[in-house]
Figure 1 (tube, rainbow, N blue to C red):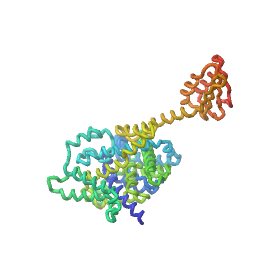
Figure 2 (tube, rainbow, N blue to C red):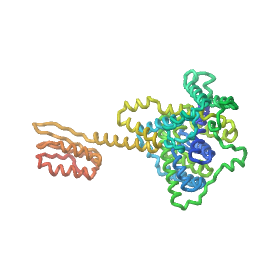
Figure 3 (cartoon, rainbow, N blue to C red):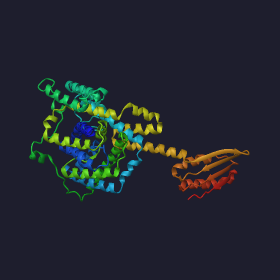
Length: 505
């Protein structure tokens, strides 16, 4: 019973994090706000049911914003775009069947941790302006370059020209309430422990919004949550869009469908890997089953007029930090989205953006604590550089570019380490003559070429060189030529060659 309550409590927290992100991402994509909410509902219920992860939360992803904008413009309408989302879902199911999810096994932990920290920093930087009442950039916009001509960094300067005293007050007090919720006193209190601190902060925000109404400090509409009002079936029909399959014979339609499938799958894989890393129980999720679940979700999203879904780390980390242990929390958050949007939208529209920004800022902080930076710095440059570069590139571009940059640096260090330690070499002087033992690794690749050149060039004249190929199975042609040329020309330097099971192929 206690676990049941804990997961419902976590679902409330995820709902409060998801609500502004679903709306903000839809606004940033320039599509109907209901499309973002429906995406959160589909991701929270349908994807969660089929997912192999107990804690991952799916919904609209900020990382797809630029692709959605470009795709809708290219296809000419949101309805045709929905058809592309439908087929992207089918392609994801195919990817799951061919076990494409295995790519996640080859992403270094340092890059995953860098991705988490980068998202945390972006979340904090993006939400600080909302905390003080500067709401020109949508809540769900994670892009560095913004539609208003500013960027993530310049907004931190411009916000001082638009400070809203009532928003600042609500934002600061909401942060204090959330910090109080992290204290042992709050967690152990028999009454307070049943009330999630984010919910308490939202209740405070709503009461402040009502209390300030009609005064000189009243919050303007653009400082409050904005929702589509659906009072009856006719309102629902007017806000729903159905897919238009008229362009399925066009080449560019399929390019967009494949692009959506590839990017959404990669973001889901990365998010799932990151979620598993911060799961207190250290469970390992089935990535291919996740791709199948995402495919089901995107098929449904395309059919009912929702944005494409992916697994999303901000909501997943909020879920874990709130103490979730099962899928119930993710499903409950989606039911809350469904129920509140359709039955009490007027109440939600009293929530100040500053209040929700405080919740997102604390979520970001938990992803990017200073101790993580200190930990990776102490691990050495081969761990720290991929970690920090992932963060830096993410800050000025997007998640996938950041992960790509970190991955390239990580691969460089992996190759360097492999080259340095793949050979067993021994040098000794016996009876006044230099003896060298070069034990070839199982696989000699092109990346070993530099080491082989350097080592062979240092071998002295009048020496004995033993080349042991007893465990060697394959050799790159360039390296093979180097060794053969060295053996062939050894007599010119009076070098005696001794071969041990040397049979390079």
